Length: 516
Figure: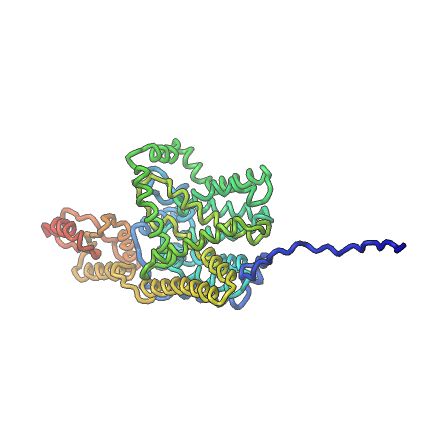
């Protein structure tokens, strides 16, 4: 009888699963901050970013009414008149926080009241976003070349240049949102990063309220998901951190009988300021496409078409990331967080009927910080899926075309706004006009000049601040801007007027020159 053979155990082989294709997005460990910022590549990047922002400085700068108002407020703080509120908003009685004014104090002190130095100071403040662009890019992209391309695009796209060189409170949203996004992407493993991100988001409310307000609440509710665990203490601490940034406005509220709260309630309940749903959904998508296209593709042909193509790619990439089987990996989680922050403002804008249906481009000033890496990630993901030669040609062709469109728009915008701007009413022209006015005063042997100022926007406080600054520099009395009864000689200063408003100027000019 044959002996029974014992069965030998076979080694276990797991079922075959398709391995993910190689990708430029493979999630590396979060790079150390100091070595990343001490590299020569970052040094070169920083020099280029700053050089472009200060190139042709005298011709790239404007000085609008908001800046004139801000100088008066900053000077009041220097004189000891401290404030709990900042610039006005589109809601009557509602004010932003005061961080913009207080950040302007060093710039105005350094320049002795010079708007040139103040503008340069604020451009430096905006440039604090550059290190965050670099860190964010290297945190998201495993491939160093893609990371550097993403960082340079974040620095040079039209939205970045416009946001950095337009000197008003939305400028602060660039470094604040860049910092908030970078820290939030690390919040899953670090409570301090979570708290810092909400501190920066709270400060962003003081920069552009109509943007940050749609992020703070939803992201606070999403803390358990962001941290992959629920702890009420973490939510409470985050709420306290946000409250700290709101403290000046809350104190102002208690001192002034809740004037801002009443203003918001009145605005929300005033049906005359709201448009119907049909009108909203008929015009708002176009407004969002137009405003978003200005961030990436401003000034080139088919800018909206390029934006729609980028929008489709970002939607595809976001859907692919959210349904990924590897959602437990930190890399996928980072892209999910980024996609959520990208989507939130748009979702709320689609149901926001206030402000008489108006939507201004500056509402989404910092949103290019989300657009650029998501577009780059979508292109990288698309390229990594290609297998056949034709697929590779098609995906690489799409990637090159879209990146080339962003680079072309960046070059075009830089040429028009920095290298060769046509600036007929900029700060340089304004100063030379006021210097000419004071020269005429000396020529005409007047003790004090009187000037009538016409600007298309009617309000001329920015000219008042320039008149005061130049008079101090020249040792002359500040010119009157209201004609006195005994004035026999006065001067007229006129900003370039659009053709459609020329009749308004003609009427004003007749009154301004009568009797002298």
